[in-house]
Image (tube, rainbow, N blue to C red; front, side, top):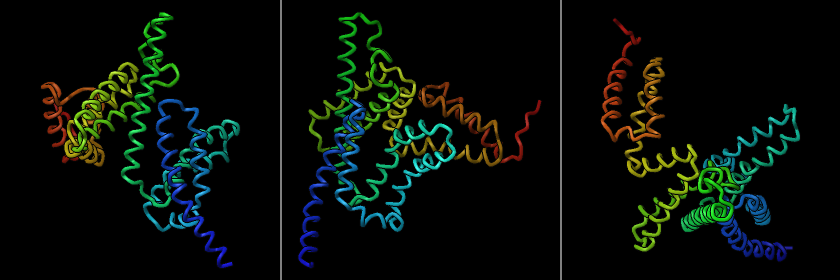
Length: 310
């Protein structure tokens, strides 16, 4: 019996690297097809789940979900899905409810798989490969979109084939704009942070960013444009600059909220919305407006109530 147990342990040890390799192959495949072909994603995710079941690390790591704060925090992302499951008890349309749970199943599967895997952290090389595959998928998606648009315009004389829903005929433009914007951020981050990157790769990365930027503009998604602006702001200001900008908006907003200074809250909210779509600090009109009214309203926060006198 002891020999049989030793053999089983040896087999499990040999299987773990195999399952890990399968995981490292399937995960990049999933992220590649997110912007390319959504219908293949459920089978790939199911294969990830089967590989997780066969590996069996969860037998040990399940107990760690309650003791390991990092694993517990990661698994907590599935609480939203569990809330949807609980909502089935008072749902009047069970057919739609079950369909909705199927659509949202990834909210449970991915936190479960990652929170119970061993090792817990993804290696940097694996993470970089995943990001590269996602960017490659986004680039492939743009080629599909532009190729289809060129055919529709040249052969079928479709107007505005390179614009909005005519361009993204098989995908919602808002989702594609979101994917491409994140790909821009990944490529931009890689160009800025990786000093060892060869010059030809830097040039290629810049051209890729420009290419994706143009496609996002053509998709005409307002959310995509706002996201693009936010990416530009973040990379232009850097982490410290962004943190300072958030401090300039959040800190006075909290004080105004506590003292019920509604006028100040409205000022900050309106300015925050406009700074998402306009370069408010790049021209005199925005700078003077913010700087003057901000200090005027901030001085009223220390008063009990803002009074407007004749």
